[in-house]
Image (cartoon, rainbow, N blue to C red; front, side, top):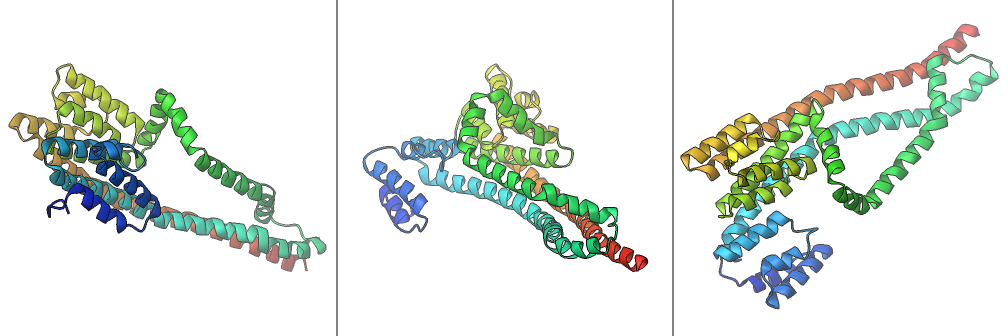
Length: 331
């Protein structure tokens, strides 16, 4: 709408009226009212940090100051689409394995709590000694249901206490950094998560540099995009190194975030004067690597979970057949 020459207030008002999401509509009504009252668009967006990130607001502010708001909004849309695409890849990778896991757990739950109690009295009345696999499944009844209830209550408690937990971790940055670094150290998942963080950082840097934002400010904004406290801390260390006089490639090399290949491409871009293009090129490379890594991870998890599910189902079938064989042998 801005490209078509529609004023910002009218564009916001038109878009807000077309929204069906009541929560987002209420937020945008507030933004529209503030803009109509003379408040800068970026400042109106900053009143809702739960929806509009610092990177979002900073790019809008850069567009306002440079007079290129519509161009910056187009670049911001591209950045958001890249991040959304990355999230969808991650969800698609783990959806099928999660369904397989839930099906296997549901089969165990059904057998332990519904099928076994139906046949246990028969074997007890005939004084048949139950084999150890069947006894093991019966023993699960004593702690399985309380365990499921406790886990469910724990998850609900974590969900309800998430705002408090975030504030507490924000007040304890070292603990937050240590906890968010742990997933990066996992042998199989860690490299994939590191590549995802690399893609987000590089795409954000390219977008902000292309918008004319100073490198020091772009580094600070890109640190928030990663969504990881440890990565953010490392990016701020690299930013300080750059303020102290190092170039971008050297400052990034001083922290263990980006792969050496990405740092090399960034350094080449600095030397040739095409930093923004090279950063965007590196981001595309690692975006493809993330897609391949997630495909490989899904291909590896699927047979492992199928094998695990087969073992669980096989153990359940064995636990059901062995008492019957024991009954036939005794009578």
